[in-house]
Length: 289
Ligand code: R5P
Image 1 (cartoon, rainbow, N blue to C red):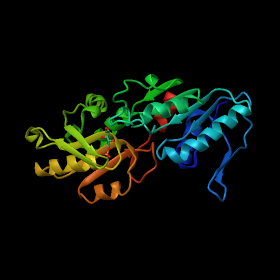
Image 2: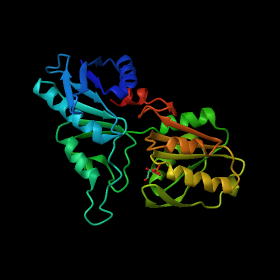
Image 3: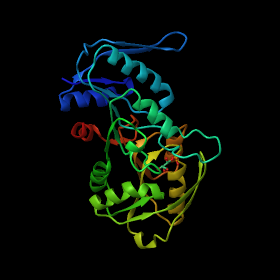
Image 4: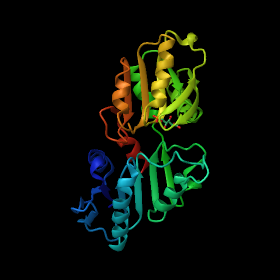
């Protein structure tokens, strides 16, 4: 039977997967020594058993080292195939050397993880300049899509939606959702000026005056993208606006800044636990394992 080891942040999702997928709950301990170093101990018998590790790679700098210790120890103890389910896969956005001397972290991180895991399952990874994960990950890869969950949420909660993708990259998710939700869509033109600053051009959307705008993106990080798009929609007198994203990373006070805009419904999937979670990826992961 496959053993599932969940990182603490993902305990609830891990329990849901154990219930629905017939995995056995793996027991392990991760704590910190007084000097901040990680202590990892595996408590379950793992010899010859396939293993799934559930760990979203938001805040990847603090999770990657314990993940490395966990996987290496599982291997030393004779575990079988090791699959990492990372509902959110970090380090996908720096997929190019934009300025001289920069580390292309998407590729380096992929090489690091592929060096010790056998397979990777993730949801809506930020594939932009890399067309598929296999271009950078040397292990078996499986990409799942939250589009069906988004389309279901929209069908249930939004009357007369019109879908907005804030940038060219979002078109891949937006097209899929609009096809399923049977709604019209527009893609905006975004230029990133810095970590927390974007410029966006909104085309003429007067035609959709009687619709409810639903902004769809893979990630909300600083929320600069969503905030700029909302400001432009407000200038066109759209009042109630919906922001839908697979991964609510919410860096710094991003969520509070979005809430402050008023009349904005913010909805994310539970790839990263957050108050805005309203789309459950458990069944998606259970079906895609
Ligand atoms: C961009 O390339 C992504 O699809 C998202 O639009 C971006 O990650 C959102 O970042 P932020 O919330 O910082 O604008």
